[in-house]
Length: 241
Image: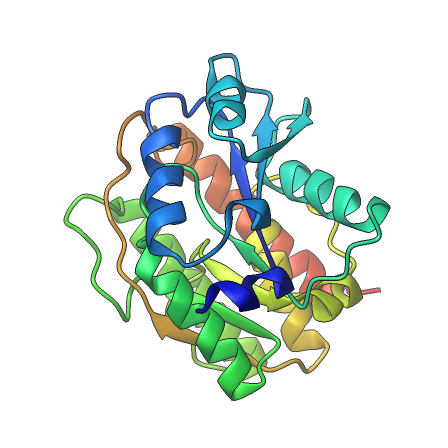
């Protein structure tokens, strides 16, 4: 990705209580992704630590989202983009814990342009996942969700990975609403329902730099997330309107 091209992309990074990892993660993205600093948008999702302060020190645009939830943070970012009358060609979603390999961002960007896809998802299953980066319940949940998509949509996928890039026009067409962990599956299912072109490519996935995952950190939380994902899937499947 050449620097002169990055003005057609905005990278949204929700962050909640990531003071131990955010600086290293963002520095790695700035140095390795080819995306300019002005194209990053970090959403401070009700952090109780110094996450927002660290991001601002790095000179990266920061928004505040007081309502806890991955989807809520993404919706705040999209509303800001709309209110500023920005019109990027692509929206990239990336994690704040350093688990995403910056080099994969260039591959996602090139793939969505070269294939004229609407949505490109980074598959941790097709790629190489560092030992311990995915919990057993995450692996099971991914397999179950992808199995359901294959049954109901006759499409074969391997992962619901958070590292993904989507055309901005396609994203606005989806009218996303989920405020929590159903965000990724909502995007995927709605894209298929709208007959959009959705593909996946292999990516590297690393253990988070520090801290505990908000999703897989505890068994109870993992179960809650799994239930929400399944609920979102079947709600969209049977009550699309």
